[in-house]
Length: 358
Image (cartoon, rainbow, N blue to C red; front, side, top):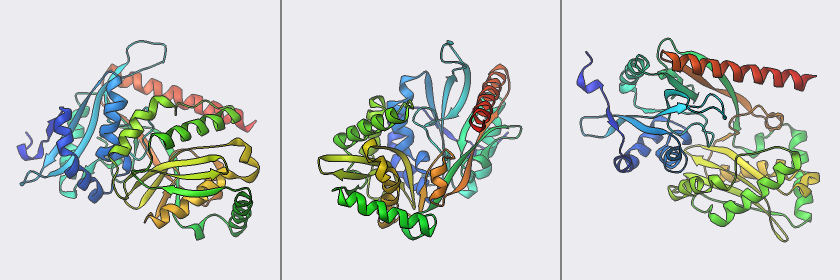
C-alpha cells in the first residue's frame, strides 16, 4: 500500500480550484509547462467549453509540508464520442483543457521529487479507467504515461527562435523587407496588443478577418463566435507577459490583419490569424508573422511556437519540428473503442496524404 504522503488530494470543486490558482500558476512557471498547462487555460477551458459537455473535472494535487502544491494533474472524466452522429461514447479520463479549443504541449506541473508519485498514480488510474492522454509535451507530459500505454499519434509542432535576424534565409528576409515596404506604401502599419489588451472589439475583428480568409481559401473553421467567451476569460486571467496578445495590421480604413497567440514564460504560441484576402498580393500573412516575431522578442520571448501542423510556410521561416504525442492506456471496452477510433483517424490521414501526393 502506498504511503499516504505519496497520494494526492483530489479537487473537484470549482471554487477550491480557483483558490489554488496563484500557487498553481507559480508552480507551472517553475516546472516549465506550456501555456496550455496553466490554470489560466485549464480553468477557462472548463468554465466555457468543458462544462457544456458531459464530464467532471478531477484535479489531483500533491502538497508539500507547508501546504504548497508540488504537483498538479488536471484531468476530465468524460465520454469520447466515437462518431458525431452516434450517441454516447467511450468513458475515459483525459486531459482537462484538450479537445475543443486545440491545446498543444499538454503537461503537468510537477516538481522533481514528486515525479515518481505522479507516475505511480497514473499507473494505478490505468488499472481502473481508460486513459486518453492527448498532445503531451515530451518533458512535462509524456514522461508520466503509465506502463502498457500505446502511442496512437505523433504531431509535428514547428518552433523557431523569436529573433528577426534568424528568420529563414537571407533571400527570404530580403523578400519580407520588400513586402513590408510595399505594405507601408499602401498605408499599412503594425501595432502590438500586449496581454490584457485583446478586448471584445479586437477579438471580433480577428473573427471577422479569419472568416474572410477561410472563405477565400475554401476552408471551414471552428474558430468562431462560439469560442469568444473562452478567449475573453483567458484575457481576464492575463497579466504582464502572460496571456492572449496580438499583432494588428492597421490599414487606412481600419484593421486588415490580426495574428493572435499567447505569451507565457519565454515562449509565444501562435494560435490563430485572419487577414483581408485583398492583401494576398503583398504577402500580408507572411509579414504579419515576421512583425509578430519582432514584437514578442521585444516582450522577452525567446521561442516562437507555430503549434501543431506541418504547414510548408512554417519551415520557410526556419522552424524545426518538436513533437507532441497522444497515448492510450487502461483496459476494457472503452480502451478498445478508443483504439479503434484512433486507427480510423490514422487511416483517414494516410489516405488524405496519398491523395495530396497524386
